[in-house]
Length: 485
Image (cartoon, rainbow, N blue to C red; front, top):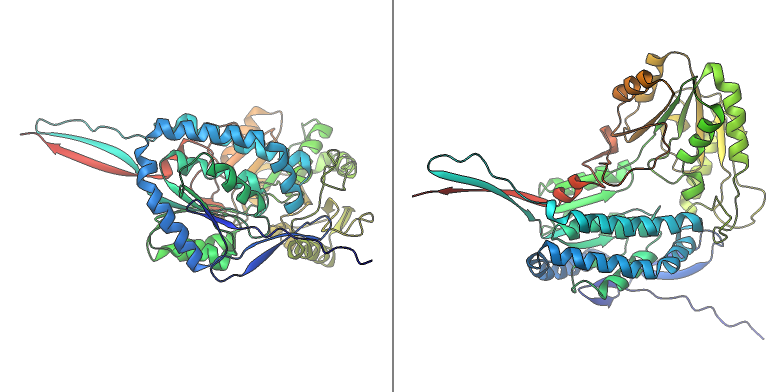
């Protein structure tokens, strides 16, 4: 007897409180990166779908703004409660859709809940000011929402970015059109379902689709005056070009080729373990713009450091990401898997030495797996050192002089994060001051205290997130001068 045909869920977008298919009927496939099996299809939205979402968002915008910050904050807190109630299901969905380890997706859901609560808490801080009065005038400013915000997020932390990155614009009084990464859209649609029980229809709309179609349409739409994008540098440039004609307010959180500089006075084992943690291999298989992928180690401790580094990397548990013991899962989708393997092939051709990993693991027969990899015998001009790999690939470089290593660390178009490891407080402050990055960690591994502004310099982005600055960025300042008779 033939086995029954597997039924694949046919998901819909959420626009104006209704579940709808793409106007053109096109679909995208959601593939499990671990099994390579089709798990669902989602609408491949385009111009018409984005236009419908923007119309719905504008229909809801005035009512959402008029609720006032206190009522909006209350609803956001209720949204956080409802997400928390489904946290485990949401975490497991991201494992299935994006291949992230369950421990990482659980952390992602908790982080999104914390971000929503944070912005609910600081909602009243998007306020104006008064200017010194004159005899005949009184001047003051108010901050008003843009109305509709376009929010585009990537594939690597699906629920964390979908839920967390709409919190600030919603708290500021905007309605939102969210476009998730086309490779991992399922949990964003679950966010829409949960939010539909809390927020008025049209306040949060989710349009699935590809970047060059749905994403470009959202950026270019004349009634979307504020756009925020998280993703790669090339895509960020495309967003800027698309928004330029209408002179829109755009913020970008883009890629990084982040340096970590290890001084000779450190606890070698502790610093080596921190370098692996900072790479985010055990959270998202290195698929993070904040990964410290250029590791500069002082020559005097290089041998001991590399021994400790390889020992830590080799101990990482790779396997089924649904197993809570797994630390390293597959990459998110086939094309990205092939891209990362291509970088490793290029590194070997250019003369790199593979200290650990370097390709597909011997174990799993299926899935988009790449071994956690440590490369040495590199120079700053090699492709794997210059370009963002966005995978579990750590490049080790040796340094001798402090001024020299800062120059090398800064010799890149990226400027997202940097990390300094030393017990010397003077060296720590001087190095942090000299590094060209929007966020510098000293003896840290990438954890950011709530409310600390995050954003890149140079090609790594525009604007700040995770802070009061982000909330305020979703408002426009209006000055009013009253002439006194």
